[in-house]
Length: 313
Image (cartoon, rainbow, N blue to C red):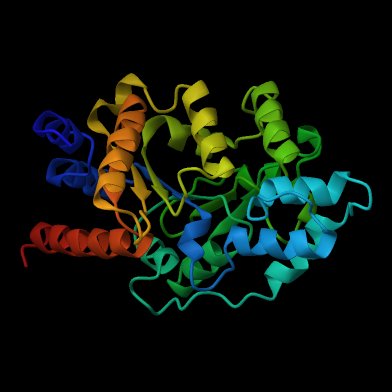
């Protein structure tokens, strides 16, 4: 990288000023975390492993056997496919043991210990709600009804007279929940249908408190592989609804935690940072280069320092 490129990159990373803004937004209850699948590493099988198992079971004929949405699409639609794939996966996921919540570097536990009114979950299980209950909070769960008639949505009653707060937060399962297999956004067609139906609903599929959070709060993206279709779908939804470039975000900072593989060369790392830095800059999103655990460790440390200063300790 040239000196000029390095200087430009520094404007895109999560520097001390942006950290201060993020901590302030958390303090004022104006930060919303999006929790992705990589937040579950160590307790939940990665999508690539699940895809390989499905590919072997159903005889997937192509080479991209680690692409879960594509493999799942084959299993559901091709000759010999199985329309019950989601139910089988849901049963498999239900048997997974939860993370080690007492571990202070476990991402769900770390986020649950902070004062977020709303958590947006894009993986399929209930680890976020479990972590919140372990922190003696009373979370409510809602699932995006992208797959059914909105007017028959049983979660609509959840929001009558309910305003999420840190003691009674909302966990909104954007891509479905294992207790409702039909709700899972799993196949390639599911992701396309999800975007079409969300757009066609006039955002009615997104509860009012969540819409307010998307509009008025900083957004924290934790545990998302940058090339994963679920993350790209999420960014397109937010970008198309102008959620990432609103005037009120001038005092905001939205953050994407990017994990880079340990086998990458210095040259590849420089190229990756240059490309992704430019991409996220266009979306007004700062980048933290490191794992989810590294991010929450620093977040908790900075939060503790902030709390100590606030209370004069």
